[in-house]
Image (tube, rainbow, N blue to C red; front, side):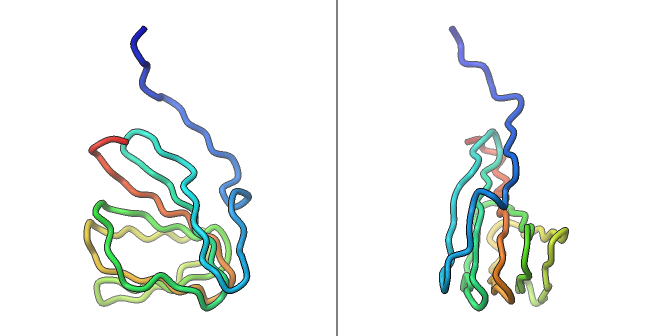
Length: 112
């Protein structure tokens, strides 16, 4: 029997899948599907991801807390409900201004 492509994948409460740990940054991949990967991050206040790039376009969305995102000469304070899109290989950094949880959505048209 041929394998059927995934047509619906549901992940419930994203924030419930990762916890903030004292003085740490924690990450966990929660979804790999056609054209996308979702990685959750939990940051204690003051924790950061230093400048780096991604090989694919990404979306950053804060689930709770507050993050400062710097990229392309701009700085954004991201709060719940906010969303940032970063193009392929755009250098960026993320700093937690408060204990925070974030969803990183990696958009990859090449597949899984």
